[in-house]
Image (cartoon, rainbow, N blue to C red; front, side):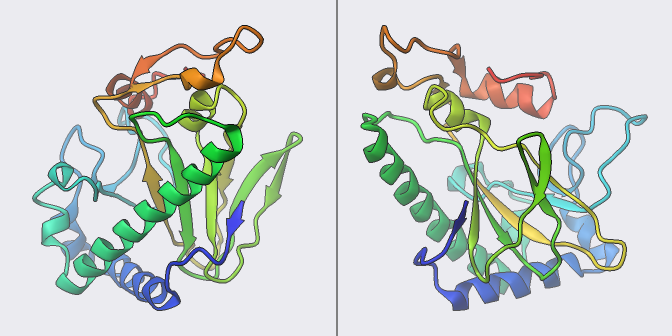
Length: 233
């Protein structure tokens, strides 16, 4: 789903795009200041690396938790260039509010009673004009042509679990371009680590029992990053 008229100012989006592009264009010696620590996922590097023998994705990745503040790594967010840090601070808050608005709308549609934990959602913004995002529909890969300054909203596995299968997660992939790099920023709105992931109790009935088991959020994400989860929980 592509979202326009989302309320996030075009000037903020353009500023974020420019500063993210500049950040990825830093010399390698500068990037090493933000390198992943051994055994961690945050920083410059690759995700889901389990061994030295495995094939890695062809691309750079910078993963970082921005909210809540106490989860921020002291060697990452606080060390970013000041202008970029200030922009990300505003951007993170704007997208948190946007995610809450989206989920509140969906809750009303489903008559889904409020739960005490957040729900998984991915909000994607394309940084440059290079295309490459594809979704799987009816067994075929379909390219997505992003609209200007639109957010691409992806439903993740967690939201499928929470809605007990009413909303289905999207299988997607990114293809490479042999001539130009593709750059985007993905914002993940996830459950609290101390919370629990499972179907919302208001969406379970005798006619529609729970399709998924309940699992601690921390356990779920540990399994996700270790690639132990081979199917939805």
